Image (tube, rainbow, N blue to C red; front, side, top):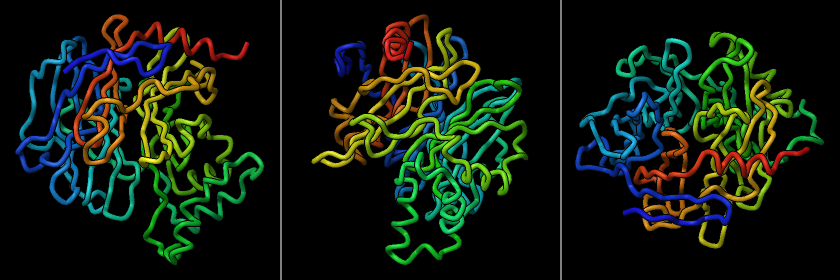
Length: 356
């Protein structure tokens, strides 16, 4: 099923339809979604979240080409649940290659905590897990450090989860750790440092570091004490008023780093997830230089409106063929779909939002 669907009046979006769906294989019988994408010439490697009964997730693998033909699809997980911190789910992978290594970031879910984790590989087949890479802080610790921030600049929503758990008497639970998801790496070092986006609700934050060993508890405590210096984007427009999160690894262009992210708004039919776009300075990626005031595309097709979670488009990876940008996304938490657009047209629209 394929059609052009004009979600906004500025950028032509061609929705190519469903690419991958659940199968009868037990590890992916409930959902196939939110894929990490790595392009190698005309081939596209897909590291997708596979959900089985009971909401247990692993990472499946498939390969396609620019025509969206499925060349290969494994019938068992490529990456399983091996450790306590991920015993419920290995979820929502993103993947980049930096120098000679592949870095796959994902959400590790243990049934209570959802935190960012890392696995590395030399060949995209064998992955070595490096463990949790996001703040190992409980909510009382988080609140203590957050109160050191410039409160005048801090969106009060950053206290939301602390307040929520305090109201229901769960804030004292030391094993309940700060939820941090949507971990996305830039595809190269900038000024000699790794650059990473992460999501402490409700915004997208940016962090830069020289070595993975630098991401200690003390590092993250200092990060949160100065969180307002590290917030890349907070909710701004109506379509993302609830919260937003990083989506696809940034794309390096002559105009800056293009990021495709998701924004969420509450409506009378529940939450709706939209795809959105912004542009970051090429040398100072913490500086947002352009941002669309409207969704790039929104749920409109049957497979996006009805599924495991309704009204969801969740972009997590891209591939570029000439000027054709393919955006791979989770559709209603059940399928993987693809949208196609002109990279030039998108960049032109983003440049119109730049301040002179």
